[in-house]
Length: 318
Image 1 (cartoon, rainbow, N blue to C red):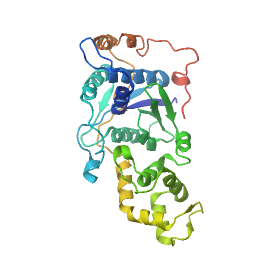
Image 2: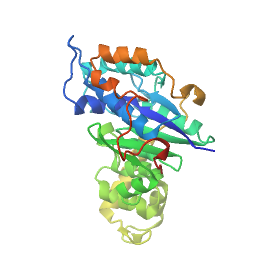
Image 3: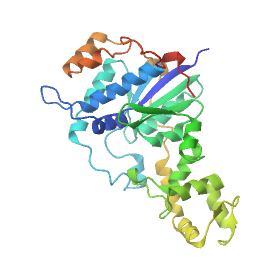
Image 4: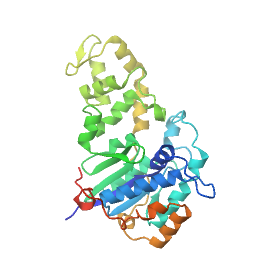
């Protein structure tokens, strides 16, 4: 039986990336639409490359999440989202609705949590999940059934992460170990503290040496500070040991904050996400209203593939 493909879109991430990557495109009425245009470029590109059987779009719900209850400074250093970016989100949703793409969002949760939950709901089905995002945080979800299609620069430079590519990027760490790495290193973009004084290189070496956060702290409790511990690659001197012990609680909190929730309470029916049928006349009119005339020729099912372009069921996935 042929393996089906589900594209899961990290919508806010793509919209933000497009907003900052593209020039300020405006309509004759003066409406800024660069984020909408960039989102559609990514959307069309992903459909052409993966020829999905199903599509779901996930959005952040405005307001605090359950992570803010655990740590009130979560994402506190991020600047406010520009109003002219926020104003483009409803336009993206309107287009997705016209494409008959279901939208998922849940109060108190982030899009990442919904994405992970959709993945879990597909575990028993013979489905390949392809997550479209600009956020490397989602690499912790990569497995034999799930890849993450990341926008590296702008909206055209993309890469599909599988387990091997994740290991290559994180110097041997598996997708599951990314959480323990973040517990030590932290994540400045989300204001996740980690262990103060532990950098990226040390965090990677410690997790590679011991395998997990729990095993690292278990080893610290069992061995004196002057010994070389684990397999002999890391000598935990008194200074490093002191930092790890001082910020132990902070390390485990950081891992909780970085971990994507996989049991978000959402209603999901895979068949309702089936891709293929949509009102082309309505979509064309929406694109004309936004003055995206060049995108009309790129609508799925209209433009022919370019020579040597990997496309559809011939594209080899992880």
